[in-house]
Length: 170
Image (tube, rainbow, N blue to C red; front, side, top):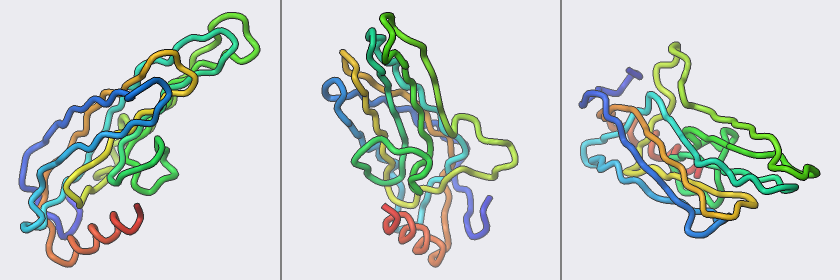
């Protein structure tokens, strides 16, 4: 457990699913953690798992399904270069120049962190965000996933620093 934090729950699994509002349209959902800011409560993320739907196989066209989980609101699907990105995944089919459906590729980050990590993120505000965005698909895509973590209480100075860091890096 990070210094200055005291675990107040056992392991919690939070499942979610977000579906595009229309094909190839960035869509974001907010997931409420129901943290108590009066008690300086935070959520320590130990692992994240994202499962984006497969992109459509369209002859001669590259397609993808991008997904991410972040601690702050985004305007596009995030990747790990964004400081508030907890996990990201990308399923794609490269078919440009082919007469058939192409070749599928899959990239993901944060599904199973190395066991040497104590935690992968701390969410200090009351919610997290799930993003999904398709590229050149014929149908709307979705992502399902799960966050694993515990609730913890922070001392006042650490809580203030965590909230300020999360909000300012948005």
